[in-house]
Length: 354
Image 1 (cartoon, rainbow, N blue to C red):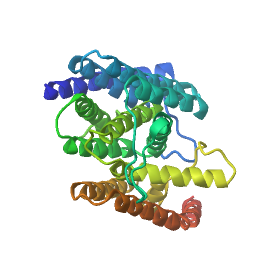
Image 2: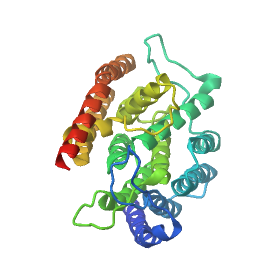
Image 3: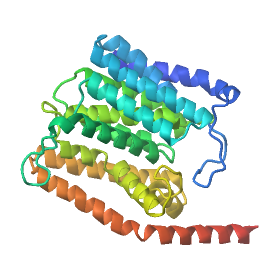
Image 4: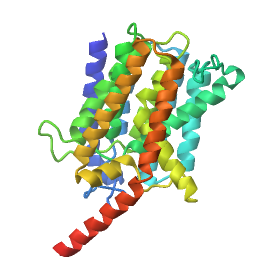
């Protein structure tokens, strides 16, 4: 049955992509180059998220029962896709996206009962039970992860690749195939047509698409839904393991938003200060930057899974994750100056060439 659901998700996503691609310019749903932080040279339709959701919705409606929790969860996903699509078309701004994220997170927590009740023994002083703060903390964490995925979506294949790694890991750790695992399998199947077009794989050219905010918000939502469910009392991972599964987007987002706040600008303002921008300039290739970041994500995920399977204490794994983040921040202090030097060198090379 799971194979059939995946086939449906794959086919529906492929059909919707084929149908929307010629329509996107007519309705103005195009991502145009021109901003300093953007690396593409031609206008590209950001229709990936709409297509992925179409495949996901069709397959899960066939596979899963029409229960209230499932409907609430899919309603949250639909909300983010609709708001994200309007943002891709009209530029609604970060405040509208934030309100939509909070609303979607509340649908998950209050409607589906997907909440974190304990953070485990992170600090070494005993389990941290959230009690009455369970729902507020879960909503805060959900919005944080959704934003992290949204902000990391800056080069081809990055957000989709990171989601594939995280969802695939959660599937491998799951003791059985239940409703959440069906959701993850269909999400992975729907991601494949998008990644083929986005990365122009297997000879598919001239059909390039982007996730758009609709897609990155959707994928962040599906990921955090699965993470919170897996980190629950009867889940397959410890809460601290989730940090290792989202380490790359989480560390990058916290660093970038912290730097913006220190500079006195909005933490949601766009710039070219993300890790993927820096690596793209270093390697003169977004594809090489993608491979480095995905390889690092696999390594960090492997460390988290190793700690889980070998029953290394939650406190040790938390402080190890914290140490890596601090080391990343220390290294990042020198990234800005190096990045400026690389940009200056690039401008000089362009000037000499002309």
